[in-house]
Length: 253
Picture 1: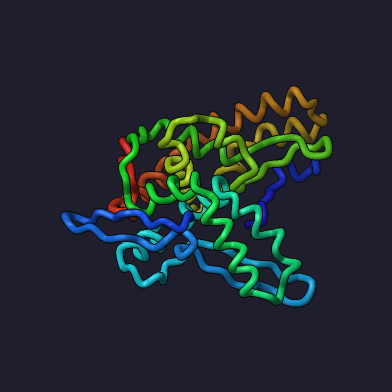
Picture 2: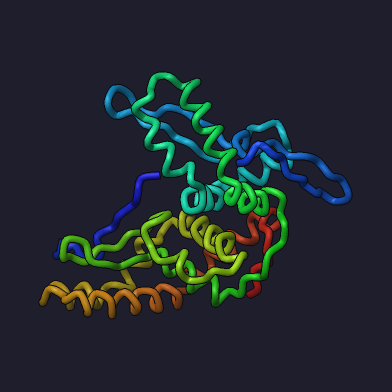
């Protein structure tokens, strides 16, 4: 997925094995991870690329319902924890040989056993630790990543360009972070909220270009400011409640 960048200051510039799903008292075997993703070619000519994303039309109703409800959650897991997410970009040169590309992708998924295990937890709803709302706000705030790029301050609000993964090594963290990403993606006004938080620093940086040290100081202030916004809290709670039956953890608020 292409990164989404937003300037902060306008004046500055799965393996072949299957896994078991338990729904109520019934058990069913899911497809291999490779069959839980769909591939299509986007664009034309030299601008073509291969789009690989979670599939919600596998013919398995429970899986499809979860994949549809948690699309951006699953995309976050894929983009950040699957070796295939980076590998797919290397296959563009094989176009238009889509059968060969699919075979390469299938092999990549089969070899990536760590992602198979991680993704299986999300697909089966295997429970992980609860997520307190204050922790969710901290994670969500870190998706608004202020940093220096070519000597100028910019913010990325993006699936991968941030420090979210580094916040925790706990098993539950990928799912908590993916949930926060989905909540932010579905906010209609996330950049307006960010604009309010960064306003005083925008004025400061307009008067005087910041040092790298000052950018790092303001980075922390952006995180704390975003975490305190009621709009972000509401987005997290609404996102959780909208698909409550599909999350593999409890949001505690």
